[in-house]
Length: 483
Image (cartoon, rainbow, N blue to C red):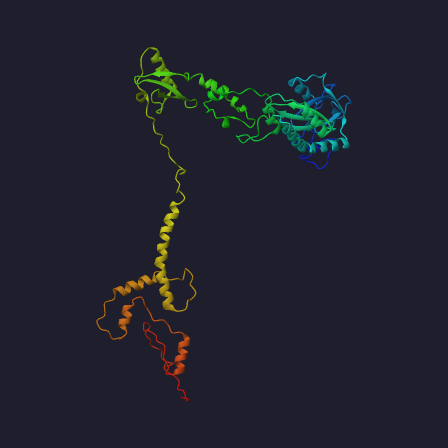
């Protein structure tokens, strides 16, 4: 956590590469992410009064803030690194608030002006270097302190370690359920770390506030951002809100009940003031019935028989009040089955088809069904044209392509009368294959070969039967002269 300026005390999270004691260069009211940080909205307003406030608020590690008196009239503003009075030695901190707003904060936190310590000076480069070095050692010191406490068999947990600015004192924050004997522990700490030891016990909620984290709601913990007073939370708060007593869900990161259970308690108490008591028992003709559940939002109460508690019946609170008044007169009510009114079904219209799982597949299915049929119809025509015309020719453009030529030829062929005579001996072969419309042209290579042999007249076109099977010509074997 850092104040956002380059004079932050945390060297690991500082935004500037260089540490100076003058604070932010261009902004006097730099924002910070510490708990309950106050924005100085009076920074650009000159104080008309002659007397000014000599007290400033100084922030140290985490959310620890104290008020100091500027006795030497040092020019300070938000983000200035100062050296302040401490016991023993001195400490180094960052100014978090100046001006007239400091008086309001002192009055709010009930801090006395007489007991305020002094500000010595602006921190020099040597003070800042020592301060950063001891801050880097805090994590390793915390781990070593936990090992020493575990070796001595003490039931405690060292939560945080804070070094003083001049490295003359180290403070250990710990949590424990019972009282701890520190006589041997402090001796071991002093001999190991070679400095003055200070032990401070904190609660489990304060531990979560120091460590920080993300709650089950997805936001940063309330205790580490804005919550200062930790009110007690008991299980009755969960019962008023009709929550199941589940420690895993109701407990926070500190191990105690969540503080947010108190936030809506007043609203639930106001709503439950109109409800009958949760211990209400109805005397019916079928037997006695007791209340099982209350729904604050729907304003309903669930009842079940004492003998058979598996069947639940929900009623409005107005009807329950009438039944209670009827029992007070000494009259039994009707059975719960007869009192139960059937719920009117809600007719909803799904305009955007959210409940339809296959709403995106309807159009695709119809498209896929028609697609293979068109492909199958076009395939034989393509094969026929390719087999009849021989080598492929480039396709004409869509405007020049003839349309429905095959269908017209087929219709003309079907209207022709059947021939009785067969003058052509190859007519049978042609009638067997009606798909053949015209004989394919002979390739040029075969024509040239036929001309060389003298079997074809070059002036006359060769008349060949396209359906006649072609056989390879068998040449007689060559004579062997040596035989």
